[in-house]
Length: 397
Image (tube, rainbow, N blue to C red):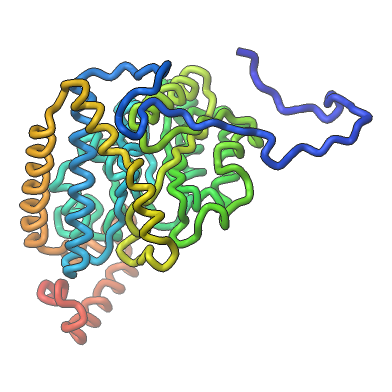
């Protein structure tokens, strides 16, 4: 393949006819393998997925849905402070993560719990993070759903939108320099694509030809702002062309289409050092977070119309038709996940919070005197107002 070069203004073709390029000159179709009823499109080619992998993907999808439903309820009960659901978007995260190699780096936004679960993050690790207890890998310093796990090559999630995009480009540049034939997959929503970090990250990736996959979950809303109020163009995928980058638009509710699209994107990234932008078209069936009420900006009729396209029923129908699982087995597996999640929740909320002294470690190799002084000031403050810090005040000495 000939290396794509930036256009030299002195060598640009000349025309004497004024031509205005239409705003939507680039029409990118949406790749789909499975129909909404779980049958395969005529002429579509299924990706090479065996029974073991397919059932793992489905079980992970079930687990995440149960986790999301249970933890939203836990937040409503006051047991955790906050939660973000991936309801309706499970196929995008799980299908793409399944197409990667374990050594590839994943940088998430905050609806990629499916990718982390597929990699092997345990229910106990999920719960410890959500409860910010002493066993939390992040030592209780992050909001719930801001996971991270170095052992699973999953970069810790940050709250500010889009910061992971240029970071992914930089990390992929290092992967290219090392020659280890790995890539970075960076998730974000279409709302984050309006951040300046999106443009800087993609432009740098295209210029330096680094092995990165930018995976945009276009779920229709940036909190309460619908897509048509976010941008006038045809979604996110066409933007790749402006940066000299390859693009794929895929049905984000079709786990096979997502898997195949990510496989091809990874091949381009690793074998040809070509960054790729994937736009996965989906729909956020839940609120943006537990702090959001979607009835304020969309109708129940809209949600119901989208519900028939949701990914889990589509995948389940295919598995049943294939004979790889029965309806009874699927139901039993779902129930098993419910019992596992509930048991882990009850256990995690009994684990104490991290010791207050933990707050100053990991900043420097050895905490500075200024940090020790600030810690003592914090202890004095908590002792003065113990009722405001019920979980911490009992451990202050």
